[in-house]
Length: 264
Length: 293
Image 1 (cartoon, rainbow over the protein chains, first blue to last red):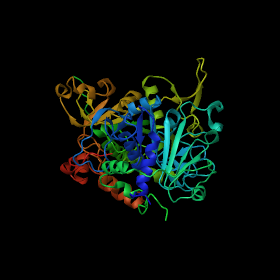
Image 2 (cartoon, rainbow over the protein chains, first blue to last red):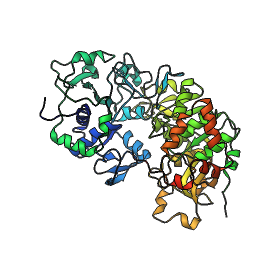
Image 3 (cartoon, chains in turn cyan, orange):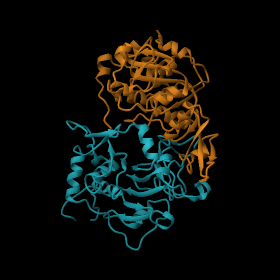
């Protein structure tokens, strides 16, 4: 054990923050709680040039804490309505981390339907902005439950976000904006740095084995010679997370709010 | 002087079966819900609807008004999945034309400019190009020779919008944080019907500072109606927020019996004033907190 305890949510926030390291002056869009706190943490530590919004329509100079605002007033530095968001993202200066329902071995993602397209077993949101995001700017993904239902065998049921699948590329040429970075889950961090952008194990969360991760994944993962542990949050990072999430909404992300270090 | 004022029912009376209708707002924000309820009370059917969908789409689907839906998503923002849309989509009860949310504005922009299409990379390599019936590709005529999706114009027979303030000649201001794509919906449409929280004299609608909140010129607008709380249960910032309690109850009313009950209470009412009273009264609706995202 380390000399300070941290939750799995804390670990995933810090792992998610890494997606935005050395990104420069791009719009960091962390959608849903863990990615948003990750982007916020990155901006407050190693990536201060990131741009962020209040998740509605304004650019803010400092990350807005999640949950009920209380006396907090966002520090507005600009305007970012949806129309401008499209203008910006089609230009490529954005890195989003979202939580799709499915991802496949190519990094293709789905937020539309599960099952048959015309009569789906489950209708979700729709493709939303996945096709446009994935062909224009950097994207990363977060999955609170790493399983063969979310990291699926074959292809996702409806390809919304595009991936490293040459069979679908126009004339077989990689779209120039396609740029997938990290997948953060409750078990591990994956990246696209395998052969031909194959999904590779980047780090294992403490106490999780490679066998567990592979068994929970619907496709073959690429495995490097040595796999590091996902870095434990530092006391400084934990203090910032506590400030960004004063109501501890992060405790509700994972069932039972497990510790980040699951070695016994 | 022009006078574009007309009752909600007269706006709906100008719509016809089979028309393509664009609905402004986004998700659970600034939706022209009083107009949607008026459509539910009418015999209109077989509509093609273009929307950044929320409960507007859900209600029209459950009421059987939609033949075809052009959309990127349907969501109630704070309640991510729209239960009525979910049920109808799973039942396969309407024609689906699903595209990226950025493609929707691109198609509206093409229509607004009188173009047959606009090129975009969005959709390439995704299932959109396989699933959206009739979507075609185009190759750049320049040296790059790149292949694009040719997003077709989304020409609308009518657009329905809700804004904060308007005057009788059709000047409007949108004071909420995001004007969304209401300007493009208006320009893409043959007729644009606008409901507003407050109808004000022309002399009071703008200042040079407020002019930035004027989304389009009045010639876009066909008809105007003053309908306080006309966006309820969606938000109309800064006037009122998303009525999550109401939307939760609406979302739970997907069974035939529950929907009939919801409909009797909130849709099949004599007029909009009766709706406001049924939904809790003006004071309560005005107090619904603005959403925090």
